[in-house]
Length: 314
Ligand code: RIB
Ligand code: CA
Image 1 (cartoon, rainbow, N blue to C red):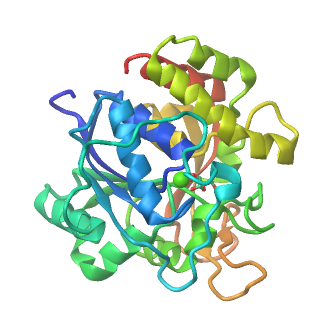
Image 2 (cartoon, rainbow, N blue to C red):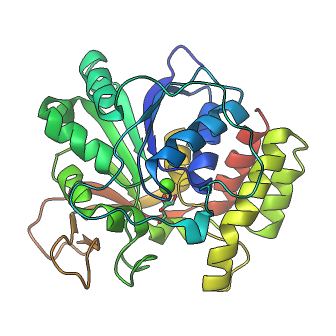
């Protein structure tokens, strides 16, 4: 990685799209992955921490620090998504059991210790799953909030609605209370909602280009995407499914691929009808202060070109 590499921590619930985001990060010398913190989400924690290590080994990076974090949301019962990701959470390719160990210690302690050790503002958090670990870290040590350089999260939806209920996107729906804590913490935040990720479709041509890399990573990524996309292709009737989590990493590598607006985002934590809805004050009709850069547009051709070029490096 480059001397001046940007220090990041990836908080994740792999998940095929998380896996591709991790590969993209590990393939990019502009980024220094200080660690990966697993959280319960797409599948239970025992699988998300295992899957994170499988992906690090696929990337040839068994040196990556992987910690296990929260096994359930702050308040609500865990809701998982095997119907999308398969029983393993990483269905598609047959990846070997990892030989790299799970790091000692809880992910929340790793987040707090790292943020208190590293220079203020020097670490970016990349949140690819429910925000439980990050909320717990903020509750455990509020002093980390001003030390977080930037939080880039995949989650929420507004004009696009929800993907888990009509109102809510999965990551926020699973732990709306955590999302509420995080969005109120005053952290410089970039939000990649469904409004953006639904424009980043894994079309047959794009998956073929990844498979045509002719490498084990290319083959595994194509298999991950072909499994992952089937649910959304069926649901939305599209060629390919939305590739959510890699948008977070792509933003770090080339923010010009995205455009949006700095707005207030509030999370529903009361009504069961709209639980986990991200209410985005896009038109600034309230006096609620902007707390997130909400992305709404992506250059999806440029995004997949970047992703494919980086995967070729692994
Ligand atoms: O709604 C999409 C998000 O939920 C993605 O992060 C996917 O991995 C799941 O966690
Ligand atoms: Ca995820």
